[in-house]
Every structure is written in structure tokens, then in C-alpha cells.
Length: 219
Image (cartoon, rainbow, N blue to C red; front, side):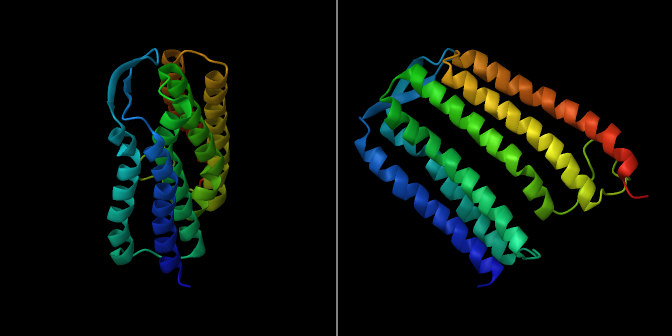
């Protein structure tokens, strides 16, 4: 099977899997579900259970919009490219399932729903961090953040080293978010840590990678 065909089947399969999982839980939901939570994780708006389909619909739209681009874009297809798209499909499907499954599992309990979402987002971030080196191996080479556009492009070994450093830091950050959610820390504090930590990590990693890996760049 051609890599391009395999990639299309993976994306369509991810969409089908999301809806096969979502629909039974959706049918079991009550007519009214938590539609919005405040910073403390308390429900401040209830809405139709149709709102539980928002993330699956967004995921479906993104995949269907991506398929024509994959079919006509001048992509150099390989097994590595397929693996990269498979990671994209897995992460997107996981994110699409968070809301509907969370609503079902928490039975409308706002704080519990907020903690479950926080734990899911933390797990998603940790997974992305752990998979970052593999994604870098499949992505086209780009200058490391912080370098001017005229800087030489890092070789594969340098890019993977940077991805390992950054990926471990990101995975650790996501793991802490999961632990905070499991220990019942208020959703507002988890959100503040999540957003603030990502900003600090982004700045730190750009500075660190620039200073540490710049001497390793080919001249």
C-alpha cells in the first residue's frame, strides 16, 4: 500500500473511531449538561447535550479539510511521514473525546468534570512531549528557535538532541498537571500553572537551545 493511501486511511479511521466511541456515550447523556465552567471549576451555564459534540465535530472538520491538501500537495511521502500523521490523528482523536467522555463519566459534576479535563490536557501535553523526538525526525529541517533566519539549519542529530531536551521538559510539565488534577487541586490553580508553565518553558527552551546547540550547527 502506498504511504499516501495509508495516511488517508489512518485519518479516516481516526474519525470513524471517534464517532463510534462518542455516540453511545452521547445517547446516554441527560438532555442538559455543563456547558461552561468558571475558574473554580463550577458550572455557570448549562446547555443542550449537543454541545458535547463540539470537539468531535471540530476534529472531523479538520481531518476532512486536511485530506484534499494531502492528496494534491507536493509532499515527499514516506513511512516517516505516515507515522507523523498517525501521531496527529491520535492526539486529535484523544482531544476530541475529552469533552463527551468527561461529561458522561462525571455525570454533570462541575468540579469533577474540570479535574478530568485538566488531567486529560496534562496527559495530552505529556504524550506530545514524549513523542517530540520522533516527530522531529519526520519533520523538515527548520532553524532552532531564537536563531536569525540567516542561521544554518541544524543537522538531524542536533534537532533530535534539542527535541529530547524539550520533550522531556514538556512531558514533565504535563505529568505535574495530571498529578495536580488527581490530588484535587482547584481548577483555577491548575490552569494558572499550565499556562504559566508553558510560557516559562517556551522561553527557557529557546534560550537554552540557542546557547547550548549553536556551537554544534554546521557552518
